[in-house]
Amino acid sequence: MAYALEVRGVSLRFGGVRALTDVSFGVNEGELFSIIGPNGAGKTSIVNCVSGRYTPTEGQLFYQGRDITGLKPNARAALGIGRTFQNLALFHHMTVLDNIMVGRHHLLKNNFITGSLYWLTGARREELEHRRKVEEIIDFLDLQSVRKATAGTLSYGLRKRVELARAMALEPKLILLDEPMAGMNFEEKEDMARYIVDLNEEYGMTVMMIEHDMGVVMDISHRVTVLDFGRKIAEGLPADVLDDPHVRKAYLGEEDEVLDALDDTNPVAEATA
Ligand SMILES: Nc1ncnc2c1ncn2[C@@H]1O[C@H](COP(=O)(O)OP(=O)(O)OP(=O)(O)O)[C@@H](O)[C@H]1O
Image 1 (cartoon, helix red, strand yellow):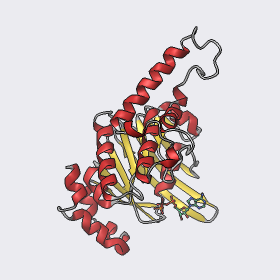
Image 2 (tube, helix red, strand yellow; image 1 turned 90 degrees about the vertical axis):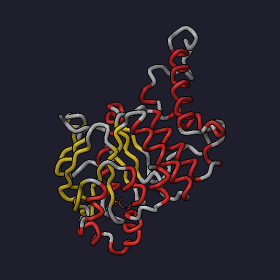
Image 3 (cartoon, helix red, strand yellow; image 1 turned 45 degrees about the vertical axis):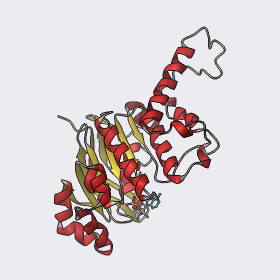
């Protein structure tokens, strides 16, 4: 069976900088797949190649068996590839509700805000259906108490959650999460880990996640790929990847984090078990 996503021999250069060199991997349907690697390893570059923000210098990308290498980001979103951003990309002056609604714009058939035939056409029915979906996501991510709040006034952890809600609003089949826990405190990370597991298991979304927190990655991922200096150096089950000497070498400067992830007493690991 074809992979949900296949990255085949992808290289990416920015002038003299080789961000990615001949990277290949496949993400299975329904998998929670993570990409890790030290700073500058090429993780965000991979997400940008998959979402269509960057075009690989070489190689191809397949989504459900279809070559998407030449497709624009909008066309990929329309096929069911959603994403979150490492640096939040919310509309700070808009409410949480409206920010999430924006995530559905690919699915809008009618412009129900300006449509003069609003009450006569299916526009109102369509709007109600969109609102129902958005409310479902708000419930799922426990955002009820802030649904009318302006996004810019929320804590960082909540804003990251709204960002996830907006990506979910597209109803993607494949969701790309770029450091969903960056800058979060322990409780926020614990919550986010739970939501990611649930959106994978309950909503059936295939997940490709980039995350620095090794404890969380190793705890919730089905498989992990490791990049270093733009090349894939390891791939496999979390436990096998942690045992890989190449991975340990790549993370030499951050050895404690890797060792923490191996530690059974890791509190995030326990909380999400
Ligand atoms: N738009 C760009 N222009 C020039 N160089 C870039 C650009 N984007 C990424 N790079 C370079 O490509 C390499 C990989 O960067 P990338 O951001 O993909 O790594 P990363 O693993 O996501 O890093 P981090 O963990 O720090 O976010 C780095 O050397 C980076 O400086």
